[in-house]
Image (cartoon, rainbow, N blue to C red; front, top):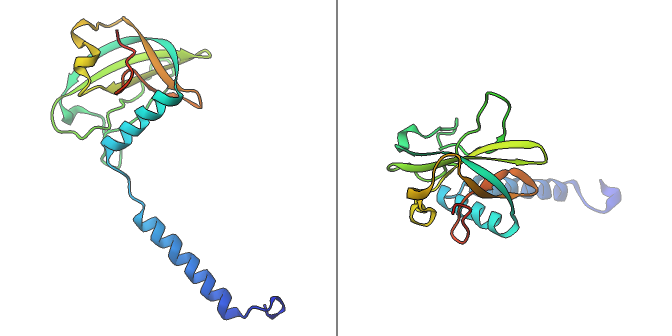
Length: 161
């Protein structure tokens, strides 16, 4: 190590400093507030999303205790391609504290059919749920880089008429 003009002690100190910085970053890295994560996801989709025709499958009001939970104990988020006989999870990342309004919908992109759900709690007025029925067409906004990431409604956009 002397041929670089740097002693081994300096290499060890630099390595320890790097390891300490990485450990500190890892320790401080926390999952954010689920409501904030979902709001940012909707904001991202509003900016970059493309619109495709979809169809509402069903509208449910479910107690928070009935929401699907992932292994980490959080309500699950999933919108993935479906195979015959299988369904995707719900996009219910809101804090579970009361009944939630879930809308299940489907859409197709490039021959791939997606089935997803969105927790629209807080958007019920905007979605006019009293006029929404199963089988009704809806506009779905999806991320072209990840077509399984989609939404029906956000703060500044609604695909439910």
